[in-house]
Image 1 (cartoon, rainbow, N blue to C red):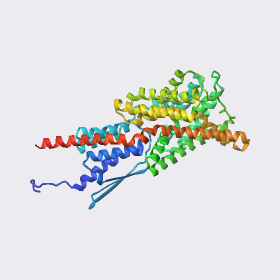
Image 2: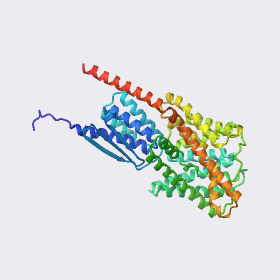
Image 3: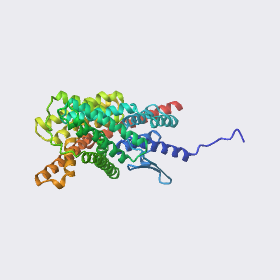
Image 4: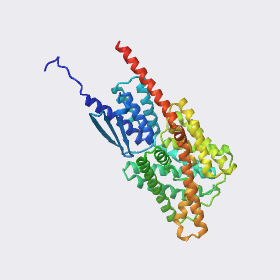
Length: 445
């Protein structure tokens, strides 16, 4: 072989490698529960870093598949990537976002970008399984307190929820169907919560049964589905919504089975009016937000931000709902909107995507009591009179409107300021690319 032979790198191989890296970027985001708009923006930013112009790039995203195409009119290359293991990992979402900007600022090579992306892909969770289970328990305990339970009920709820969460994790390790795992864990948590009813000490003995399985509530998938639908990503939004319905259905099945086996009478006729100070409810909301943050793998440095966001959202909701008497949906909407608007400013100081802060902050506003009233009413619908049926329907409407209000409230900045926010990011990205190109030309001289 001639040692002086020159090897010319295949340009199609280089393009194919770039496409695979862009696809892997999108895969990490999709499997970590990023909304579709964020996935698309980040993939386009990474493509710009790699020198792929926007006019030649085409991206198609569904919940399970990401497809990308480059076409210059004469040549066309298409690749796709399946997304199978869906979860919630805010640390990965934040890390990928930072990498997409850092790669432009630091003028990374493809090898450097690939090394960093692989590191993020294999990144382990910041919290151990036991710590997350405790966090899930505290989150449900916080819900119990927000529903009007006492601190003893808070403790009972936390214990039952932690055991239920560990059982779900064990089922997942055994590769049991994810929906079956949800049903099993919610059933176990509900049974344990029912048994605490016989333990003396708590003045609110039914609250653990109300909150013990709420670590399963798919708040983030639901909010992402609304985001996608509002951003006109219809297929992805509908798929996320269906997945949310299946999760809620599995959770309800486990709880209903436990209630039927234990022959529990209607325990949902509870007062929803606050019986404690704003300070106590703020503490409970902070505990719930931080607890869910461990499940969502929110970076540790942001836990205090999420806790503060949870306190703000719940206190505003209670003020609008009870002091102004404007209703739960209006209060939840106000809480979500204000937290989202505040997050627009905070993200520039903590350097993280906005949803990493806002989503865990608004989860404590989920209307668990009304959801249970609806579920309990559907179970006993054959034995209901007309007035009871109207009350069940009313609970369902309030729960649905409240959940929708939270989702829309979180999306408000994107709905009304998307063009402004996107234009600022595009301008910043353009300046970084121009700076990089200028530095490259200077180096050539």
